[in-house]
Amino acid sequence: TTQAEGPPRVVKLRMAAVFIADISGFSRLENVFEGATNLGVDTFSSLLNSVLGGIEAVVWSLGGCVVHVAGDALICVFAGDSDEANDDDDDAEHAIMEAAEEAARRTIGAFE
Image (cartoon, rainbow, N blue to C red):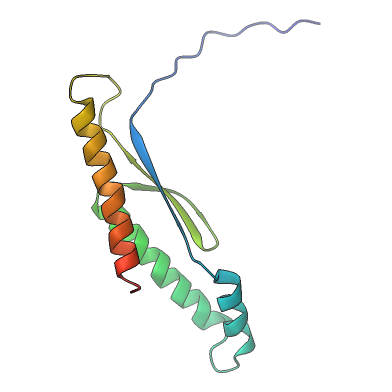
């Protein structure tokens, strides 16, 4: 049996930077909160939501998009505005990378 070929797929390339944030020591921290009778899971969940919400706010404020949240991690994308290649690609690439780097700086700076 052969498979019929469908219509050709069109792939559009877009310049983008991916920013991944993951909380180091998350499982250990979760265990501490679960074992503490005066803190508990509710407090831990509130703390986690606050941290992730803060990161999301930074990403959105810099023109990025949060594309996936899983537990203690976020995957964010900073993409260019255009699907077309042009002479401004270097400027667009620089702007995208600057936004992703600034998101990382603000996120790390909030916890130092």
